[in-house]
Image (cartoon, rainbow, N blue to C red; front, top):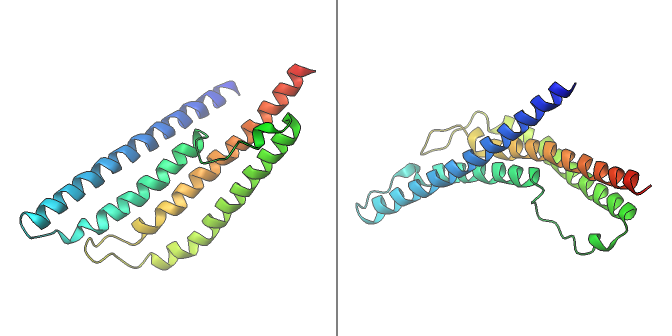
Length: 169
């Protein structure tokens, strides 16, 4: 059993690093494409047609993969000023409730994004010829990753509380 947990931890670390580096690579790609597009437009007066669609697709992927990394690290936006003032038991209940709300929102987002993916599967973008799936899939993939990481955060919150209660008694 311990070997399986260790393998899952290694897989988790690999996934986080992969998401981190892919997001960074996408950012550099966006910057390079925008630079080339500006030079082509203002120096050569020949803007590449694909220079609007490609960065948009890369930006969406970078955003949703980056949000997944932030969620995994627990760095997503939270206002903890009031939560920190609660006693441990009400605080863990409130935090678990907030995690549940986020999970419901992510589940809803995934549920309603699937029909959109099916609807867009046959179409393609004009200038790149890429399938519209490249434009709409980041929401679903990012939400699935966030759902996984948000679930882990909720479990971690509960386990931390249980550990502190056991040490205190």
